Image (cartoon, rainbow, N blue to C red; front, top):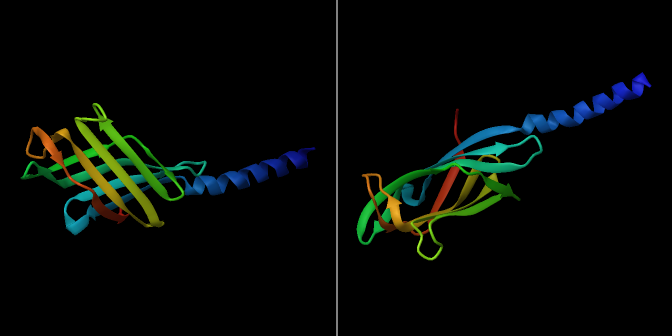
Length: 150
């Protein structure tokens, strides 16, 4: 009976080790189209193999504020689930019809070390890097990112 128990523990430990080896977090960094602004985020992998994008940061995103050129910076701290190497979510502050702020993030992992996608932000109260908030929009911006050195 002792052999079976030891053998069973060895099998369980053997199954648990590969999952633990892939668990962790990797940082990605890159830029929006035409080198305007930056995108940074973490890809978290859980022990069960499920992944999510966390702390999605956008820095110096170019905006059109009724003809005035502005930029915005922010972070989405909520996790975005990854399924089949793709992730997407929309974050809205206020009503869907006339939001104070609406951010849409889409992406896919094109390899273990690279990701690309689109990003947009719009609303009546988009925070500006110079202070204050205005009615602005970025339009849909392409972005690409690679694993960053730690």
